Structure formats: C-alpha cells, structure tokens
Image 1 (tube, rainbow, N blue to C red):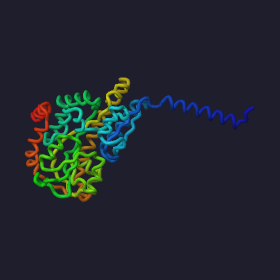
Image 2 (image 1 turned 180 degrees about the horizontal axis):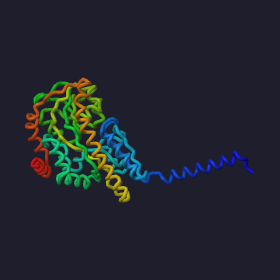
Image 3 (image 1 turned 180 degrees about the vertical axis):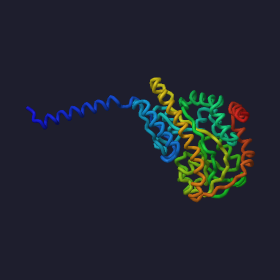
Image 4 (image 1 turned 90 degrees about the horizontal axis):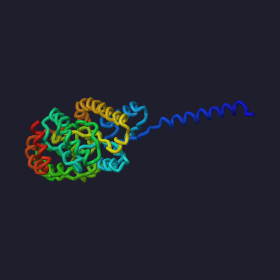
Length: 326
C-alpha cells in the first residue's frame, strides 16, 4: 500500500497532467507572424501590439500574434517575400508594393497631395479601393488597415534650401524607381538601399543624406549622423498593414472577422498616436541637436514634376490626374 505522501504525490501528478492537457486544448489554432521595420518605441510598433492584444483577446486565444519590430524578420522586401512564401504573415508596407502593383506608386508620388484631407479622401475613396484591389491581385497581400505617414523630409550634413543645393548629393532612397528618377532630376545622386543599412552608411559617409518622415528619423537615431532636417515635405503618403491572403482565408469566417475588426481598431488607435506624435517630433529632434531648414518647396515641386510625370505609366498618370482633381 502507498504511504500518504506518495498518494499525494500521485494526486499532484494527476492534477498537473490535467492542467497540461487543458493548456494543450487552449493552445492557439493560428499564429500570425507580424514583422516590420520600426523600433519598439515607434507608434507603428505600439499599434501592432494593440492589434496583438485585440486579436488574442477577441479570439479567446485561438489566434496568437507574434510581433517582430526592428527588421527582425528581414527588410521590408524580405518580409513581403516571406509572406508570399508562407513563412511570415503580416507587415507594414507602402510604396515598395509598386514593384508588383504599379497603382501602389500613387501612395508616395512627390508633391501629389495638397494636404492631409486630400490624402484621406484619396485613400478612403474609389482610388484607394482600386489600389488595394491591384495590391491583392498582384501580391497576394490583403490591406486591412492604413496609417498616414508624416511628410517625408530630407536629412543632410549641409543645409539644403533649393534644388541647386542638391548638386551631386549622395542620398539613400527606398528601392522605388519613381524616387530614384525624381531625385536624379532634382540634381542628387540617389542610391537605393535597405533601411537597416542607412545608419551605418551615413556614419561611414558612403551616403551623405536620406529622406524619411520625422518619426523614422527619430526612431533610427539619424540625429547622431545628420545635422540638418531640410523641410522639403516632398511626399505625403500612407502605408498599409497587410496580411497574406492565403493565411487570412485559411481561418474560419469568425476569426477572419476578428482580424479585420482588430485592424480597424488598430487604425483608429494609431491615428490618435500619430496626431500627438507629430506635435512632439520636431521639438524632440531639435533637442537632440538637429537644425530645421526652411526649403523653397515650390522650386522643388516645379523641378520634380516633369520627372514625376515621365516616370509614370499611362495607367499611373491617369490616377495622378484623377487624384489631383479630387
């Protein structure tokens, strides 16, 4: 006969087995790997974590969301390719999508949008739906939310006030043909490069300048290697949160709806963060030693326009005219 302590030990083991069995029952049915380029403090990552909390809560744990900031799953293009291969599931991406879906070029055309209201009217209207449709058809990625990006600004180690000041400036740009063509027309020497390589390249003087919204200028610590923020406002744009179509449609309808509802709430959450963040960013970068330079934006826009129009296909030029008429 067993002694009492041994009986208690066996009873404890049985309880433990039951608990382990319960954990197995409640393990997630689906895992979403969500990789992006921003760091942990960036509002995109905060929005991604909000999405994670909403999905996991509202799916009763049937979906687990794993968030990978700081390009932990690779560059933006790497993650897009991984989603298409099924080894990642979600990312935050923008104009790079035009490498597959030409209409996505409208997401970041220099000097296309008059202001924030004009941008929102475009994204949420028929033009935006047309762009989303082509993205899904050509890439297998489904846009489920969009974030406004602050205007893209140039950073440099000499002040840039007019296009003439760009003469020969080695500037990093995303791997987007329209950006390359535009900066060449403005007089610079653009170099396509992954975002993760920019800081080191600036530090080593392989490139002399880069362009991004203030949020990424801050989160990437470009203040440590660049002195000036030249307020070109050359691109007003938006960015999509996308999920692999196959992954989304592999879930039952109720879980697909959980994902879409969470994405909608994430979009509203990020919008509130964005407004507050834009109010903070300029002063934060000034406090870190960066000097803000007033730029002749009309001179930039006028010189850029012929190159922009020449770079667009007939299909893209039609959308360009449609957007300008909104």
